[in-house]
Length: 151
Image (cartoon, rainbow, N blue to C red; front, side):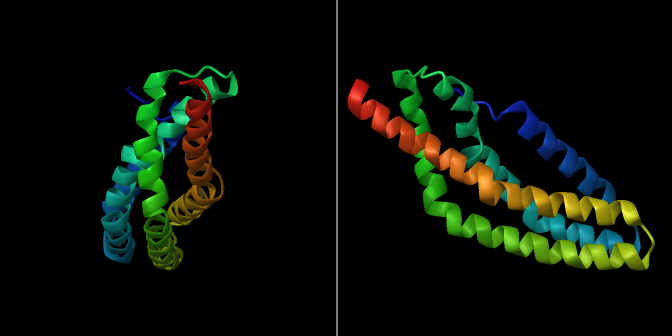
C-alpha cells in the first residue's frame, strides 16, 4: 500500500528544507552553523519521511472507520518508529543544540530571519515529539486492534 505523508506536513518539511538551504548559502558563522544543522537534519528528515510520517496519511480514513486489509502494511512503519523513537528524539536534541548556535550567530550578524527559522524548526521538532510521532504510533496500535477483530 502506498502511503502519503499529509500534504500540510510535507509542505512544512519542504519549506524548512528550503529555508535551511538558503541559510547554508550565507557566509561566515551563520552559513557554518546552518551547514552543521543540515548535517544532522537531512538524514533525520529522510527517516521521518520513510517511516515516521506516512502512517499519518491514514488518520482521515481511520477517523471514519474506513479500514482495509492493505493498511496492515503500515504496521512495519509504526513498529520501526517505536523502535527508533529514542534515537529520533536524540536527533532532535542535537538539531536543537545546533539551532541554538545558528541563533547566536544570526543575532551577532543581525540576520534575524534565521533566528525566526531556528525558532520555527525547534517548534516543529517539539510538535513531532508531542503530537506527530505519538499519533503515528497510535495509528499502528489502532490498526492492530481492528485487524484482530475484523480480518
